[in-house]
Length: 193
Image 1 (tube, rainbow, N blue to C red):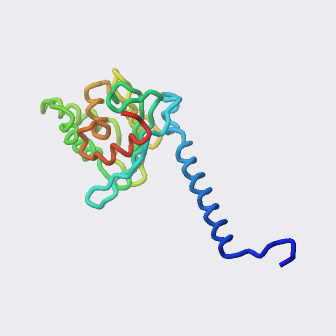
Image 2: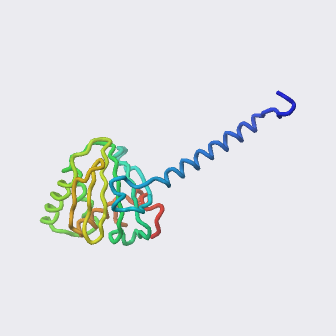
Image 3: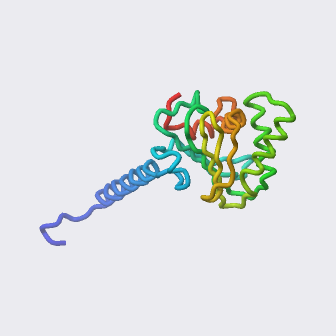
């Protein structure tokens, strides 16, 4: 070592390593916060921001990664009155019939509806997206007072013009009566009640 450079101690190497890791963590956190909503929804939700994200696991099996994108002013207690999109990236294969059946079961937690409504809504949901394979991505966009639009892997695959079905459907993730309160909390992490 030259006399102009002090010797590098283990302590200073640890400090440098810690500082570098902290900087990388901050950069990674910023990258997540700076992400844009799914490309297919940008025209519908031009200023949407990531509210939160999480992975759904059921009995130890990974089902999907979920992310919620909201417009400014979004309030969880009145989610149906706001434009937002919910993005589900599947980690397993499912038929559209299985997804629609499960959706109807979960929607019963949000409110009462007849068997005839359930059958009609199941058909509408099934027609709105195909069977999914691991790696497929479905995005649902809430359109207050109108209904919802579905995109699968970036392509529009369905539109439902039933506000009550839409409210109950998104309630699966966003209503206080959801069967997955931790998932709801993670999706709403950056919003106020």
